Image (cartoon, rainbow, N blue to C red; front, side, top):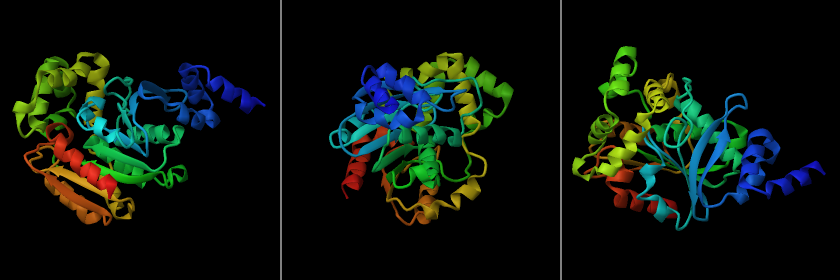
Length: 315
């Protein structure tokens, strides 16, 4: 009787759905079919420290979950998400600390922390036959989800698309190393104007910086205008290459999902050598190289990136 009452309550308002999803795990899956297209928030994480993640949903069909990279947001998918939504249910999420999601003043910003939240999003929404598309930091999160042996995830993730993904220990840009120095991170992130930081980062990430518009600079600068946004950037950067990555990477050959690895030919942040190594160690993968591209194929070369993804999904 109580279960039927809860289901009737779930039909009243979207607000009620969110409240119950945060407090009554047994009812969470019921919210899935009622997710409408458009922007929304989902409360995830432990009850004592919940985090609201912003997400946008569009389209119908087998689901695609878009996971952005460091310092980015759902904005990064603007040039490929609409076309993907013609044949799929596309869900783009702002990770904890980025975009419109919560930015708590804690230190839980590693790819492991992020993967736990995304796993809960997958389970709470009962996503199946799921394609994960992860860029850079988001690709690392996708790899963690593919390696997760939680039986509740079994069979849910059908395919992976990894775009210029962190995957192995590597030399990282000086700006990331500076985040481990309290004084330098304070001076860099807290003192330098946000638009200057955004412009410098985008120039590093693009092959052709004439493609960087002022609207893009502003979108990437906006989170750096708040104390919470600066905190999230600092603590995410300090953990951008997670501890134990050597051991984790030894498990990549166990990933069974068909995987598209797409890499920019001129990536200065996560070099092509990483992509080549990843391809060698993932038997079910294929590697495609995108020409005249820096680190952000979905933004700088969206047409080529979209063609590769659509071909992979249709194959």
